[in-house]
Image (cartoon, protein in one colour):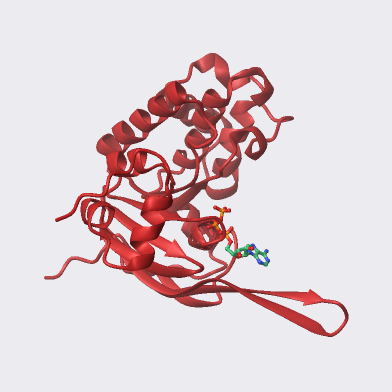
Length: 264
Ligand SMILES: Nc1ncnc2c1ncn2[C@@H]1O[C@H](COP(=O)(O)OP(=O)(O)OP(=O)(O)O)[C@@H](O)[C@H]1O
């Protein structure tokens, strides 16, 4: 019996159509039809220069916006564009900047319990117990339950954002440059936390990431995008050391951190 991939993305694309003036419509293709699969416990990195379509792909996968065409299947089950209840129990997104993605007027406990109130039948006591458990899972303290986001550091806010994503026990976490705003030492703590959660919970990650060191360290597969097209896709080691296309090679060389080009 052939095993169904955890995530299957089939011919997905997104075209923005915006009104310009009274009669004119401007179409902008954020990403052209693309397909890929992701297995359980694996990490896919989405790379590409600014405007290549990575964030829009992440948002379409997370249901923040509908695709123009194509389908998303989780465990063989098609996730329809408007079916947020089903989607958010399977796949959750963490946004780029925890300083803006958490409501400053809500206590952390309320932030964590909001998805439970919306998507589960748990009572107040059960919601609180789960929120406290999830805080512990991401390395925060029970006291943080009562704090406001403004009272904690950016790294701790990123842990809260991760806890909010984890609280419904999803199978897949989509993270949009989640760690790029953090300083180096906090960044490595969050990466280690993501890796340990992956091994204990069997999570799969889709990460928009542009740091080659991080991508090499955490991802199993890479999709490299350029102007909405996939120019390279495959196992991380192969894509990073032996890109098949001119554009892929140029893009990888343009990442001006410690990328080394190894000839095969
Ligand atoms: N709401 C929108 N309306 C029209 N065009 C949009 C909209 N959102 C994004 N775009 C365009 O779609 C393309 C892809 O944008 P996207 O933000 O997905 O790229 P990205 O690779 O994530 O870039 P960055 O690294 O800068 O976030 C860009 O040309 C962008 O200008």
